[in-house]
Amino acid sequence: MPQSLPLSKRPVDIAIVIFFIINLGFITYIVDIEQLVIANPDNFQYPVWPPESMVDLVHWYGRNFDPVLMARPAWWRATIWIDALFFGPFYLVAIYAYIKGKNWIRFGSIIWAAVMITNVTIILFEEVCGEHATPHLQRVLLANAAWLIFPIMVLYRMWRSVTPFAARTRQ
Image 1: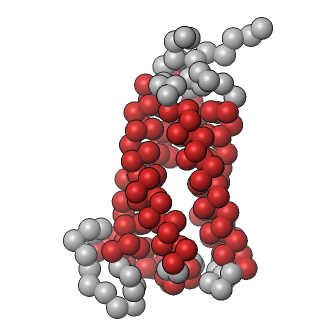
Image 2: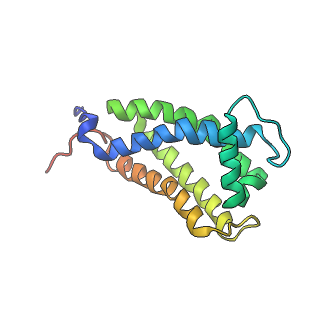
């Protein structure tokens, strides 16, 4: 089995690790948890977690740019549960695996990328032409672009080789 390159020699993986860290530490367990613990953003008491300032930030963004985030239909909450229950633990394991160059993360990465692309496509379809379409489409598309770009990058990285962290050999 070829030896993995150190992370410092894999700049794309550095970007992916940073993306996973942001998702784990901010998106999944602050932004998403807010949407699970506060059913009605128009009538609630601040929860123990996330912090009040983060709840206010999520609500400000939703009220100003992203109506579906505030409406919280059932299908939306389902995507949030997927994030909290499956993506959060995946990010924790993936951060370790990408840093250490562990090839066993390959299959999980492919699954994560496929599900993320599916979820974000559904969400963006709502943002464009759904019941809760955003009046600020360019801003919302830009804010969500990373959740299409990074899964496509991961899918490309992991699909090409069973040893994605090893040096590429020329034949």
